[in-house]
Length: 294
Image (cartoon, rainbow, N blue to C red):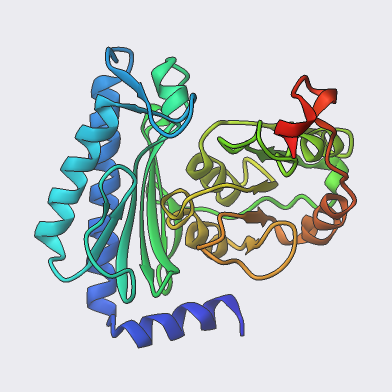
């Protein structure tokens, strides 16, 4: 089954007709822009930063205000669609149509005044990403996509890069909050790929990473330990911009398992082959007692 066949089947199963599809795209774009504007209004003025599950897993008043505003808007516009939001959780059953909202992806960046952060709004059907919008407000960019419509940044069509060789590619990745407790922490992969590409970046915002792959700024991306709201909007944007999305490093993409691989088609196999060669680093090599690194 091709990517487009997968999307068309999901649209048919969800009974979303063309007119409704365009309405939902407009709603997703408006919701993402709304959240992005709230973030910009707070940018550089954050006073209340709290840790959630771990140190570095932060929440600010901007997250909460943006999420409240987006949820209220979506509830008003699409009363019959479930909402899964990072801070507020799930409002109903994830089966069927569900909005997945990350009001502020890149909270640590935002809290420190580092300008890469985003608001991400994706629509899924039975946990299959259908369409999405990602606002990167500091750059004044809105990435969005839907089947039968295409992939765009603001109003310009976008396409993944034409990079054909890994050695000529710029990559991006990230590190999960549990990275100091497990060996599957992506440290070794980061080092390995840094020596086999033009470089590996760490932006600190998965939604931004996916948007940049779709827009051709980044050639390949992989990460683990993500949540549904981190990926739901970005997956259709990458795929409908001509990119490939799968599990990391192999297998079919599953929104539930927190792992993702996204790239331009020409470097997919080479990048996956290199990821498969990586052996995790021992904890004492980066200053963590072995019992914590396992």
